[in-house]
Image (cartoon, one colour):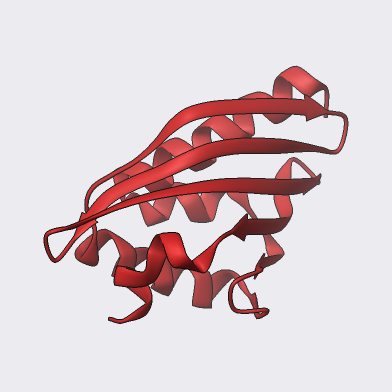
Length: 125
């Protein structure tokens, strides 16, 4: 995929996550996608990640990605953003870096880096 096509895929993915549209997220994922989170050290497969995103949508109000900076290249992307939202009247502002790999026109790997202190209200739920 060209960098322009990778950018369009990343835009669809993050817009769908922010909108809580897990069907659209699933359409962006490769069937063998693996999502790794530095704060847990765990790798999630497609179904587990979609379940977590549905929970996130029910738990966080005003979920959005702000201050997005994305660099795309053949085969992947790097995106920095601030994840914002509210959980039980507590504001979340989590600077985050996502590194994505693309295969067969879909997101094949995602590595998410953020300081868990910024999402403490979520981790307590």
